[in-house]
Amino acid sequence: MLNVACVIQQRAINRNLEPYQICLQRKQFSCWNNKTYKDLEDLLCTRHAPSAKSLALDLQRGVKLGRDKRGYPDHYFAKSMKVWPRWGYKGGSRANPKLKPVYDDGHHLFFRLRPAKRDGNK
Image 1 (cartoon, rainbow, N blue to C red):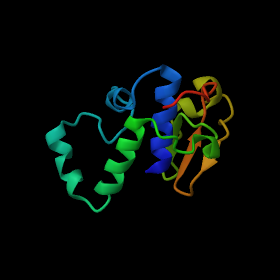
Image 2: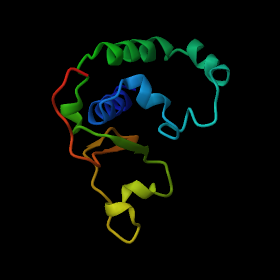
Image 3: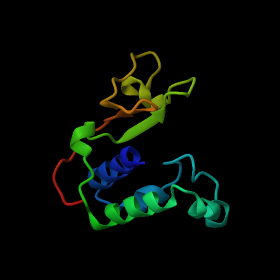
């Protein structure tokens, strides 16, 4: 969760938006796609919910989460995916070689597609 929170934080800084605005943008995170709050309400009862809430509050408060230790990633995807997303290729074209990840947590690969803004309190 921390690694994904770093992606949210980096996107918020790069785009000069608040983290909640990043999370709510259409097609940014597959878990939200075509879902309502009611659809996701049961997630608030999982054993991971307290950690997720704590991270969300840290994002909202602008706590630095360690983006620098992860290469300032602004995109990620699960290693279990059989096909890389279109953005995972240089120039967005599958004819070009795959981008190199800036961080690998064992389950996901993390990438920086745009120059990272490294300052700011977000």
